[in-house]
Amino acid sequence: MLDIRLIREQPDFVKSRLATRGGEDVAKIDEVLRVDAERRKAETALQQLNADRKRLSKEIGGKRSRGESSEEIETRVRELGDQISLLNEQTTAVEEQQKQLLLGIANLPHASAPVGKDASENPVVRSWGEKPALGDPVLDHVALGTRLKLFDPERAAKLSGSGFICFTGAGARLERALIQFMLDLHTREHGYLELSPPALVRRECMVGTTQLPKFEEEMYGLENGQLFLAPTAEVQVTNFHREEILAATELPKKFVAYTPCFRREAGSAGRETRGIIRVHQFDKVELVKVTTPEESYAEHESLTANAERVLQLLGLHYRVIELCTGDITFGSAKSYDIEVWSPGSRDSGTYLEVSTCSNFEDFQARRMNLRFKDAEGKNRFCHTLNGSGLALPRLFAALIETGQQPDGSIRIPEKLQPYFGAAEIR
RNA sequence: GGUGAGGUGGCUGAGUGGUCGAAAGCAGCGCUUUGCUAAAGCGCCGUACCCCAAAAGGGUACCGAGGGUUCGAAUCCCUCCCUCACCGCCA
Image (cartoon, rainbow, N blue to C red; front, side):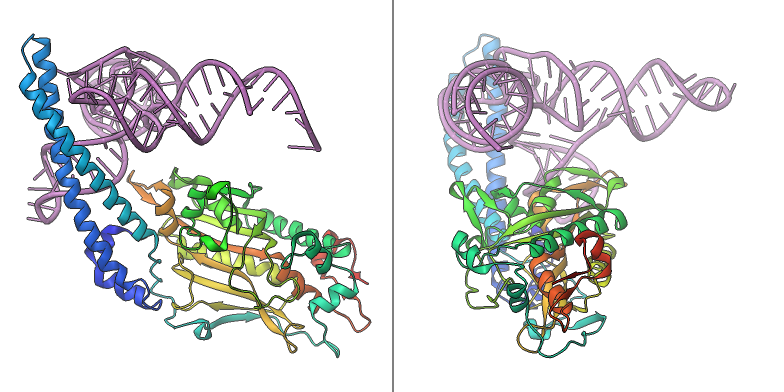
């Protein structure tokens, strides 16, 4: 969430930054300022009453120990107590109101984020490789996967309903090879520490990484909404150090985790539902960094480069776009999307998003009270970043489409062959 | 699932109703002594929030979390969370 002091001191700046997102939250700023003033007034009054009670209660203690009567003071303090509990309720309520307001206001886009209204205005930052020259016809991943029995949508539906996938045989093996390949790359060459976290997370963690309270309808909840199936390992891994004060010397923290991810995909019925592009459960290798405000933007670039490296080693054409202010996600200050070329999708091919690499600055850290002690010994909020490194189903689709051969087989990229155990699928 | 024991500051660890935000030790910072190192002595040493234009200063809260009892709660009561141990069950 945003720093209330920043909102208080520079409300016009905050509003103008929020306006670049589309303005939905701009009106909330005046409201939160009004509640903030109310809160401080109530707090000050409450503290004064508490101070009075504290002083008088000590007097009672003194009088009693000297054997003097304290009746009169006790009556006064009892009255004070009634006022205090009344004012305390009001104060707590207004504090909670302020907190809820703040939790619902999006992060400020970074000054370098391109201003734009929606996804159509996201600039392409760079691209790598080229679209492969394939024979005719170019098959999509569904046709390829069905023919070579790499996954089985019908039986997955039998188990879990529509929107679920079951990899089979060489397909399951290929997915496993990709996971192992990516984990090895990030741990051995990029210096990330591997975590294998739980899939179920507490409500507080979901608030910490901004899935809640705003996006609850997208999440699978259990135990009366106290436990959730994580929609991304961002949740588990970023919250790993929640409520901690890290030493500046141990930053940046770099984590990689392979986990299943669960999403209701509410409201996206009919959108890219073909095959394995949008499913309720999928696997993902996630990269997370916890760092300092001074270093976070450099770390953002390197994290993005680390994710891109996967596609480069696999020889898959991709492009990187930067999300404009109108398209950037709720908690992010700056985001890049990595989109891999999927030659079989939508007839003539399309780019599929396989990673969003974001710098959240201190937006998440403030929610989860994640801090570090700087050189002067001051506690400051960390900056947190994450990006997929990469999401598996779409990577899988792009890989088999790109690798399709005229004879119907699929060529496996050289770097993946040791993991997959063969040079082709046929 | 059952039973039991616990959760106090960066760490160890006292404290069972009043001057306790909290002894003591360790770690850390500063000063003094010392040829250096080491050691010793003295002092400082939590966080968040509020008031104040700011600094200085003042105040409130915090002893796992939330309620309650009381004039007053780290201390008593209730609920929850977490940790540990043992038993049962189990991949």
